[in-house]
Image 1 (cartoon, rainbow, N blue to C red):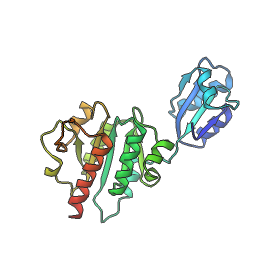
Image 2: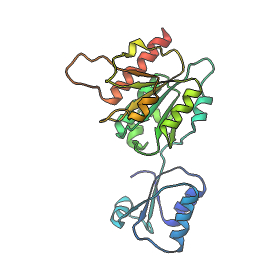
Image 3: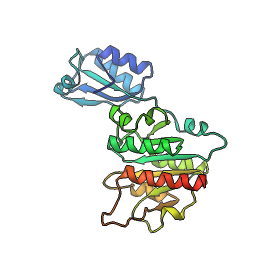
Image 4: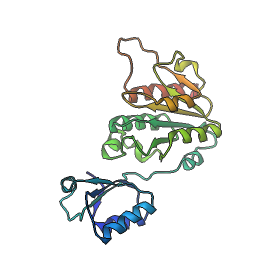
Length: 242
């Protein structure tokens, strides 16, 4: 496990200095004033922790963890407003939203295609999403160090806010009869990619302005989500540079 810190005081100092904590593990049944203070600090910073057996902590580090191990985020996350502010004036905004993509290689693969296609930012949920770790960064060929990434508590609320900013929300789904070639991507666009097994959630689909399918000739019913994202993104590129 990369980017880890352990021990009550080092973890508390990391939280107080606003380091972005990816995961926080606390030993089940851990007690004492310092541990109570740490949990209070987490509550104040709205930071969730997971209570685990001591064996898990011992596997994560051989150091004196005192019942606490934290994983620091491998990248610096931004806010949605930061993504919008960074879009050059002469470019049409393009954002990719992840709705339940949990495989780090798919996450990294989509990020790589997105960076190549000139996407201005990636948005993922805080829960039920692949961690942006060393494997994801490696799969992205370093794209995750270049493209802004935002994590949000609610994908639905974020999409509503982007609609209010003038974005069209486009769902990639094989269930649609409308093809990606029949859409107009020359306006500000958000492309939503769904979970590997179940696709985009019904609640998010309802918000989308367009539901678009990639035409498939073979007998397999769907593309891998990273491959589908690449096809979608480069249709956007084709329309915009054409």
